[in-house]
Amino acid sequence: MSVDERLPADAEAAVELEGPELIHAGYRRLERWRVTLAEAGARGRIVQEREVLRAGPCVAALAVDVERELLVLIRQFRLPAALATGRGDLVEIVAGRVEPGEDAEAAVAREIAEEAGLSAGKIVRLFDFLPTPGIVDESATLFLVAVDASDLPEHGGAPLENELTRPFTATIDEAVASLADPAPRNAYLLLALQWLALNRGRLGDLLAP
Image 1 (cartoon, one colour):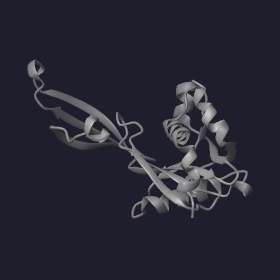
Image 2 (tube, one colour; image 1 turned 135 degrees about the vertical axis):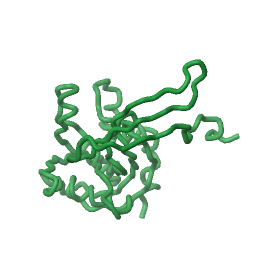
Image 3 (cartoon, rainbow, N blue to C red; image 1 turned 90 degrees about the vertical axis):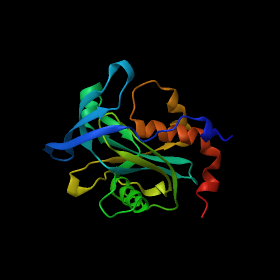
């Protein structure tokens, strides 16, 4: 039996959906839905009203300069993080949403150029994940991307989105060692660093031309 067969897996749910009711159409679309769950024994039918922030498909890049053993990261202000922890100047991996009609590989190469000012080399798809499925429909794909970190710009970000990023590098050793720090960090970064810690010995083979 394979490991996948032993693990519990996500499945379709027996629910009835009513909606959406539009609450707000801004930078992201906010909707209200009514969810009726199937019979739950003595509890009977359960009805929930839930708000959903529609973010859609996104991509993220674990950007690595294998030759220099460097990881390319960015700093970016995030208002929700500032409200939650008082520390809104986040360290992040490059990430962003997939535009309509764009494939994921093209999206991650575009985000590398916009946020880090670099050209993407070889791109390897790693895995998909749901960052915050309790409130946001965001579905993200993490990629391993080869880059040349020798000429990082001081600032980056998409002008049309009024985005401001500050690219920088960290050694792979520093990045992996930072996992011992219990301070809150964003899930994209933690997942990427954990993958890196487990697979750093494979980077050369995965990113070989």
